[in-house]
Image 1 (cartoon, rainbow, N blue to C red):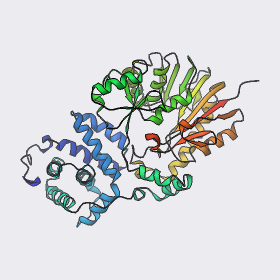
Image 2 (cartoon, rainbow, N blue to C red; image 1 turned 135 degrees about the vertical axis):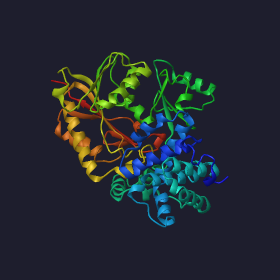
Image 3 (cartoon, helix red, strand yellow; image 1 turned 90 degrees about the vertical axis):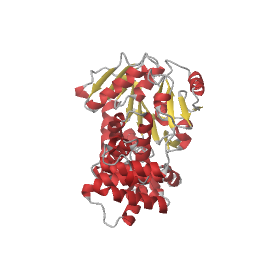
Length: 447
């Protein structure tokens, strides 16, 4: 049976096995590639509409593969299409990219991939282009695709910046951007010891490796749906990258400390701090009121934060929220370019512009200066980003220290990555973690 003779054609194609997933992939890719939308946000909206966890996993796999191999697939479209796709064909372009990803990167059985993708064209209202989709995908099946050069996916200005900031490591950083990120778990100390939970995973047939760099981290060599993780719904474990988990190690607040998480959504780092020490008096802020619900859901699932306060506010606008009582520790996981997590957010290479960095650096400085005021003498502010750009990291901290004579940088150990004048930078893929920057700033005690 060929793709064009599918028995589902013309009678509820969207209900055919796998078709709904391809339709969703086409729409997500159309939004990201054609409308400048965020992959993370589009997937967050699309995934709950698929009932089967296998379909959700396939949707994610198609979208990530299509974006990682975007340049190769776009070149194929340019070569193979007699007439270029127009501005109104963003959904068709997305569907063809999804089809390429299935045949190429994911190596799905060709018959199933072709049939479901052609039927998805009909489900999208593209009945007249179903034959075109079939023909282009069959050509892809016959001829295959060129090898991807990782640097081709990078905008030239960003490529230049990374090579300037990290001349010796730039090749590895750029190559890593094409690789899938591993699945990292954070074991909830309030429920399990890490070794005990690791044993539960083994009983469930899930291999997990303990990571010595962080006491709660497990890496899964083979990712699995979170629904298959023992006790996930009850908060026994969370998905969180190694580098993000090390934020709690770098901040290391004293027992019972008054702690501020200034840019807290979706709440993973706040929850981690509370899992380690429920006695912390924590205030979690985020400027986006819509994301507060994510923090509350994270707290509810993990069973922490019953006494924490969550508030929607610009953390730099002290008059809007601060009661004048100083904090012992402040976590500023600052808005940034996300250049350290391109393997998790490949659309960063599509959307980021030089002007974004200028604006982000100004915002980071504004937040640091404001939050320094709420920190008690002798307290600690941890400045972290998921960026690898010196402007946002080492240069930002150097400028802050020049503005604030009462600030000093407490050196962090090698477990946090490359030494950056006392701060630390992990580059993408090192120890399996994301690219992340950490600077532990101490406020001088009053004399």
